[in-house]
Length: 226
Image (cartoon, rainbow, N blue to C red; front, side, top):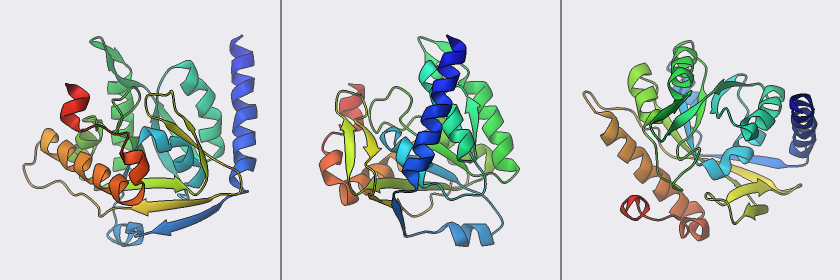
């Protein structure tokens, strides 16, 4: 069964790579060349709903991402490998139990310090939708890498409307817009909660500006946690 599951992952990965070549890509407000000239790297902040579009559209020579140790994560890893993305396996705590998130975060710390950009689904893996978890803030504070707020919006897409995040699947032959907000740099002595809130505000503002219909499905932080 495990072998069959692995084979299915590779078949799916190859299909998605072919799928990618049917799409067009457009980048807006790209600050990455400037950040690269400064000699550092950066951390992409994306929404969990945009994961597939972000990996389809990624144009880095090397990239890393945190991927859960679930069976869904197992299916995703072959596609990431084919797209040149290193998977750090683990996810946030559940019921007080560490599900590998701490070791995955340590792996990402080493990769960022070595110059590898990281893509971080800030509200994953279980939500609430658009609620930014503290992992990206901790990663930025411990490496000094700026956070790059990012939306990846297909011109035509399917929605998994019953999924907690309304996961988005780009349709073939669509145009995918990679839209960047201004980089977020941790202030001196800033704590992780304050930085997390700044990332949350920026991501919500970007979605309201560029994808207002989907932004309507995102509750405020107080509503999500209340």
